[in-house]
Image (cartoon, rainbow, N blue to C red):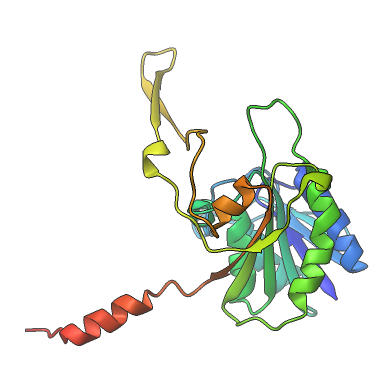
Length: 256
């Protein structure tokens, strides 16, 4: 099995090193194509107005000065063109990718792009308290990820589905289980805009979710990770709202 690994935190990120270890448990044919720098929050963006440059680190490791999506495109359509990967693994992200994070996340976007290219793709993230001053519990992802990926690869998936795995912020011995979950929804009031001034007196702004205790609905990704479980959420690249299509069809809209 040929595995492509990538991320959105950059080629030097600790989580990418963890992912290399995870991938090595699954195959001895692992390729890395990852961004030169941190592209967290890049979403499914692609470099169309600027050239993409790529730096070869070794025979199977490359750094790209672009987005996570660019990295998957470069890997599949250029670096590995003659023999494309059988699996794309993206991560391990520093911090969770839950609820609406999936629309912002470059980690998810890389798996999204892999799926669009017809390759089974899995995003992996390690929940983390950024205010703790401690390192993420990488051991949790290291301990469980390879076995979970093996199990996920046994059944066939629909071609338009990717898997989003989130590991809770706990030590391996404290893990309470694995749950198949739905995408949750955060309280949007927890998205503040903080205004500050630079040394010239001009305003600038920080955007980001407030770190607050939430009460997520049961069986969602937020609930699972909040309660010490691994969350596995199948995500579809088809964003069509089927129920709304059927509702609109009943109205029988016309051009007049």
